[in-house]
Image (cartoon, rainbow, N blue to C red; front, side, top):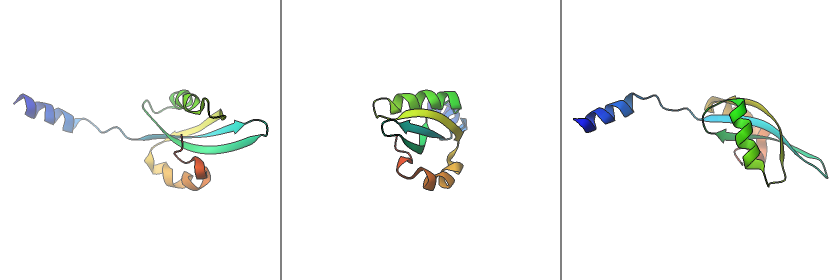
Length: 90
């Protein structure tokens, strides 16, 4: 009975939707810019995306300029071409 109740609770819990952010970053000397898309963990907001991106980009030579937006998987296809090699790279 206990196992059935646990399974029922798990099935009734809403699934967490994937969260993504698009961003702009730069390198200096020479100046290079890129636009990218990353998957981020919850909570799905710009402040959390900024924090995660700054850690991921640290040591790569790229500096985060800004988080453009956060979105779910429905926004991935429209951004894939613009992000190019930086689509889900970091």
